[in-house]
Image (cartoon, rainbow, N blue to C red; front, side):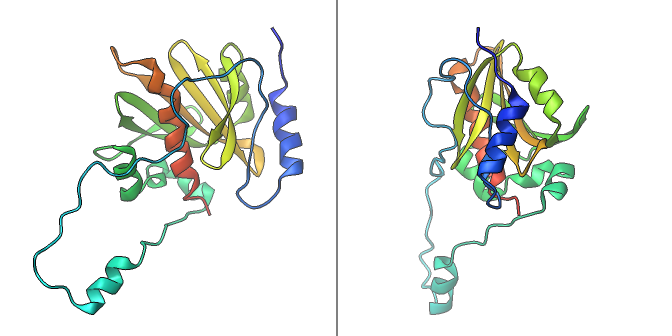
Length: 203
């Protein structure tokens, strides 16, 4: 089995692409990861829009047509409050009901959401050493996360995704575990979708 140096590939990618929030990743080791549809794509909200029968004023039309401003935060703030990384619009697009659950972890704080039978935990300040450990024995691949690339590792029904933003020693990652009886096919796409949505809120 071929092996790759995660640190080296992350750093070489960072040198080539240093434009703001351009995400850098490590390379592929073996074959493809998950077989589901493209990771990071957002689905329309399943709830239909209901319109009021009352006549609307011109000002209300203007406010309704104006897109809501996307809230962005410093990565350090999201690292301490990761549940802020998904707003109401993200939750609706991903089909997540309820708020995320914030929990202390060995490497900082994470927020966990339930998405289509998948438990997705997001952390925004993971050390490279942790990523190396989690990818060591998994089936590793390079996958798209939104408009960026990430390292994905599948290991015993768990899917890990890591993305570097400016610094390979401070990684953004998701850990996705399916509930009992739920197909594993959606595990990696669920984690990638949460990561992609979270990355849009980093300033």
